Image 1 (cartoon, helix red, strand yellow):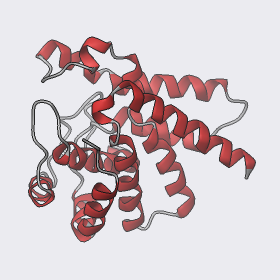
Image 2 (cartoon, one colour; image 1 turned 180 degrees about the vertical axis):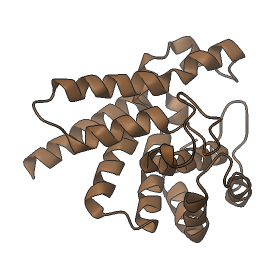
Image 3 (tube, rainbow, N blue to C red; image 1 turned 60 degrees about the horizontal axis):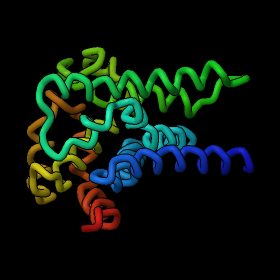
Length: 208
């Protein structure tokens, strides 16, 4: 139990460090983690695996620590060159976690899950995502869950270049992305538990 508490405290600390660096998205990690867990429960994933998904979800954007401030903190949309740099955060995060795996005396299950989520949460069901262009079931399920949670949160969140979108409109866009951007089964689970998504988003909403 002491080891589990230490794991969780360390992971929470890493995720909060990311939030401190990027104030605009400070509630993002907490929201998408809880949303991903809700999806995992809806898809009847075992509790032990859900715990590892939660830990991995907290670290999904850890690679952004390697993105230069002038890009990560830019008060507006990124230009194409900047966007290419931003996209490298997926590989950077996975590489950092892989180094931690190599340094460990024995395999640590949540690091394996965290590496999958960090690297593949921007893959798309139709193969048009990044960094590896994986498609369909080749994308780890944990990353497919995170992908939907990440899209929902991006749509409903305020940014300097856009207003937050109403929850119902975000649902429409996600449903329209079924079998193109997003896993059809995960979209179906989202629709069935949409009220839970709204509740989590409201409880962990960003402050003004």
